[in-house]
Image: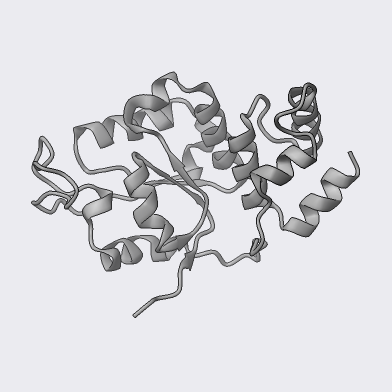
Length: 199
């Protein structure tokens, strides 16, 4: 039986793309992937995490192993102290086992976010269910439309993206993909078309 997705008030930070795939079927929220320790060398990703911490708050949902704890600590360390209360750490239970796609269990022998039962994840995230009216974007803007608006693939695309970032007060220097993801989570198609049409 298909259950309705939980609409979250905060963005969720997970370690890997399989975690994101699992959560995408359960929640309606911005899901940011750290790519494990890849966050350490990714300035754009750190800027996005700071942006979402400030604008709507974060849920950090990393594995309950040493690596997951280290990533949680690092995320807090890159945020100013005044944003720490906007970061919720959600801890998954330590369940022995291995994910189906893996040939061997993790170093600590416990399941990560992708292996935890969906109902358990739902219970953990229900308290963050959105009470606001965040716009639902049933027809998100596409990569092709980003190109049509001159925001990617054109000689002056970088300058146009900077102009848009300045106008909207969003992080500067985002790649076209990161910009598209951010726009589609903050605005409806109609709002975006209005903003882009007036540039």
